[in-house]
Length: 632
Image (tube, rainbow, N blue to C red):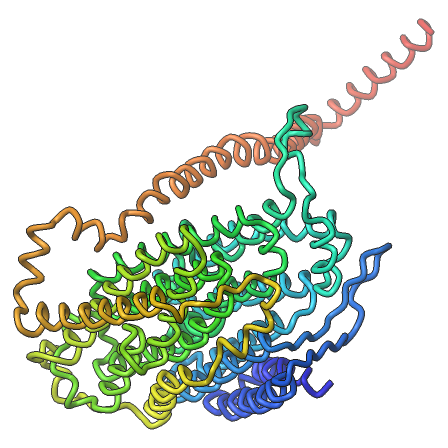
């Protein structure tokens, strides 16, 4: 029961800050930081407890009982949950500490700490869930928190638009998730993991007729439909094609929340959900192939956009989209442990890169365009060297964590079969682009002549230690996590799921060498183009203008959505407002008011104040009554 404090401590911090922020104000970190650090300590204890292979299952209380439906709030901690607890609490703790320096002096200081504590609580409850309904509730809670935090600077129109975009896009995916959840209940009679996993194997051959309500026949595997519906939720949460458009705009929030969303919370939920429900996905090869292809498409798309962006946070954001594609692709190919391995190492170096961007932004007085940077490596040495470590890990440079996890992922993908081999080739090409844009960011931002605004050029210095210390810790983790044996630790969780081992033969070694070669080539290409020949990128942009413009404008996906969905929705809403709200509803309400006013005006005419008029009215009334008496 002590492990219930892992999520409850951040929740308590949120409640205290929510109720007393007006008094705590700039001391909010004294409430939030200790709470999250204690959650981390308890997460370490939970990790040690389950390292032997045991599973902790704690039902906390009964939430809902109706007939055979029995829903409770509970904790389920196995090896997969344990590593996720460590990821969330470590990154969240460092983000909380970083926020002390980054958000110092902001009017919403206490509110921001309250929201990130609530965000941490929601993500912890999501990974601790022992049933699908609890997972879904906190799946929605992290979506709410992301909306609140992306729009933290609500006075900015761009932040409000980005928050709304994230909320709406995720609702599209979550609608499918909810349908999948209902179908699980209808077909398996439970939403608890320990009930649905055994029942799924018994119902593996079940089909469902999608056209039965219309008198037709179209039999589809039950678990294919369930898995695809649940995966739509993951497409939204983990920013996969075609619902990837919200994640890059999430950078409109303060940098600490960008790091938290991109590294440990929100976007990791989709990958975790697919891995947690591996026993269901393994029953549908079709659904797994769809998951793999969607992940591969996202992987390539994100990388092709990142190579031309100029906003330092947007480059890292599209990198997240691409790396999430790697993880989803691996899960779709049955390599769940490899996908989760990359998720964990990625959490360290992606948090490092976002917080490094924040350090640069602070030093340059909130400048984010790398074309107005340059020459910063000597002025920001801690930020520079830690940023280089993060970029090396992202590029898969030998001996970094990203090198081990990406190689393990690609080797596992190659070993999975013909589809996996095709997608591995795409993964290798993406690795080339990843290394290129990672070091394009390094060279343009930190190397070369200074292009900083002259008004700020003389005042550039490292931020406070509350900013730089988390960078150093994350830089160490970006190397060390590659040596912790995470895949072998996780494989027993997926032992019945067809995790593809192998890769130690000649083919596996070849894939590893190819991945390393791609990474080194990408770094060398960035050095050649942005250090040795700094005018070459502009010439290539002119020579390949269509491709360059397409990548720079994110392949016009946002514009297409605006034309296909946003504008028609606004137009339809405006027409409904005119024809229904104004003409019918307002017309009816106003018509009643006008009728009463007209009646009052007519009655007012007989109230003239003249005695003879009243006498005449009385006489006429008497005449009418007498006439009726005679007739009837």
